[in-house]
Length: 148
Image 1 (tube, rainbow, N blue to C red):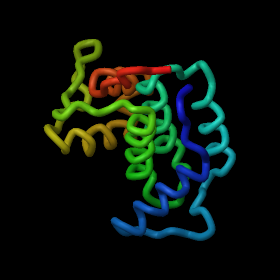
Image 2 (cartoon, helix red, strand yellow):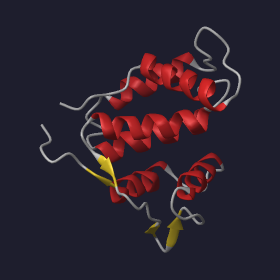
Image 3 (cartoon, one colour):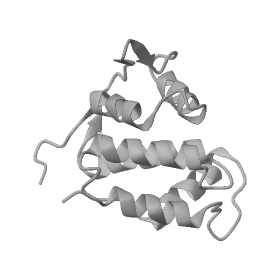
Image 4 (tube, helix red, strand yellow):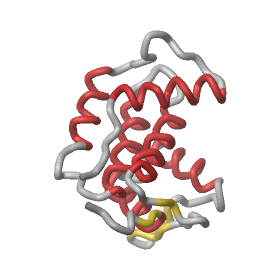
């Protein structure tokens, strides 16, 4: 069984990143689109997104592109994607890499930890699609050794 993030988990990640790194948190939940958050968490729990890469890409892409919160969507998306992988016993490769899909590098720039920044920017500017993002996560993560 795969663990999923709840709406409360994602709201907590948003609040935590704002309190840690700055920004504006509007109580009680800082939500710009509560319905979209509910749809995201429901969708992540379906068989349509069976792998950790599928789920990480779904959280990352949806939070950024639908701007679920009033502030810190990109940071929240990053935390949610990382959390779902780690929560389920997966891991990120020590050295993140660009991924080539259809002769195009994702992200187009960046190395090391800058890859996260470049990836976030490319998703927010619609340069990377959700299926391409899923491929990036699949190639930069290791699934759990003993998945259930």
